[in-house]
Image (cartoon, rainbow over the protein chains, first blue to last red):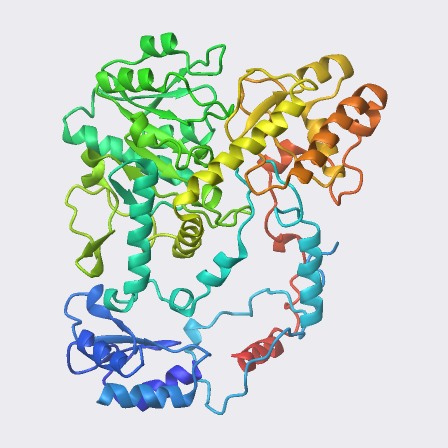
Length: 85
Length: 499
């Protein structure tokens, strides 16, 4: 939860549900088709999350990012980098 | 032995998470639980000892011979565990995009192709979680097939022999069909005359294990197929006994239209204790449109899920099925390659080796060469010495053997159903024979030793009715004080630190 909260701030992207509490994962808007963002990030060795359009209409740019205890702050920083690219 | 909850001491931990410098965010009050969950609190050495002790009280195929009929308790090659732990398989998320899971999809596609070839049928769905779900899925396919032909209302009967696995009639009932039982003839085959009288325009299909639970290959299978197909009905093959025929004969060639596989039996997925299992089904081409989605298909060099099946019965299991099972079974089948037939040949040889040495000491209801298993009866022991199949089974535990399946099939009194599998050494089989023969001697000379068996197991003879009807498989919190009732506030703080 601490890392997910860190990620929420560090990624600096709009939240899909800004007023709701989050736990270990957070839905963000990446400003382009999420599939495209996933492909771009994967090309750089990072799997950034799940494209919510697979389950919900109108969420083409929404990415669900989950953080486990296996990750580090450096991992989150790297995720922010590749999503910004 | 104490339960792990009885060993719990407040505040003890078996592990700790790395220290974090980041603050833990507040969780809104309405989303917090009122008190920590009642989990056992225990140190790591105590935890290791507890579960290691439990493991030593458990009999498995890794600790001894396990001739449990119709369960195919063969050795599980350790190389399969190495393969399933390749990071590309192990760490894959089931929702991974197709272009990032090509290796896994290719493995599933290849497994589908191999299973179709083994079955002699056209298409495979890997989804069902185990044999019984394969049965239900197969029956749902029958329903969809007859619905499309406008025969839903007329066809409502499924024929099942009296030797069938108990799951067969259960699946029939769940699928909304009616069971029509058919008898076994004096040679252990389906009674074809009885069958002819029962198959008509109301028959949807047959469910048959071949070889049967008697370990006998039905000598009239071609005639049986003719009877069903002439009546417009379908044939379902219960693959629980497939270990007898791989590479030798194919259910599709016998005329079966639907087959389920038990990957955890025939193809070495470790089982026992409830799974995980795998129950893929193979079907003839006319049933393929109804198979569950998604199918794994190949487009040139690319593999993908295919959901575009308008006549599908839908999904029968989460995601694409039990993937780890697929990896182990695929590795196992590929390790045999074209020699897969040897697996079944040795299984049949081992069973006949045991049968030849035991058939004079026990009753043999059907005196034929067997396939991968055979059924003896303790009927004479019971009549002469008062020793039952249950006594024989319990006494075998004193020799460090797992008992065979007993009191099944139901048409053999005092049945002992023995399946050695292909992975046992001759010495092990000889020791088992010696134990079985010694039990017969003891039955007349010192029957009390058998009546009181087993002698050195943590549990002797349980109340089987109570164990089945009133199984206690969870800790009864309501019968024990809540240790967190006092000082719950302090414990909440501790739990938060742990987060």
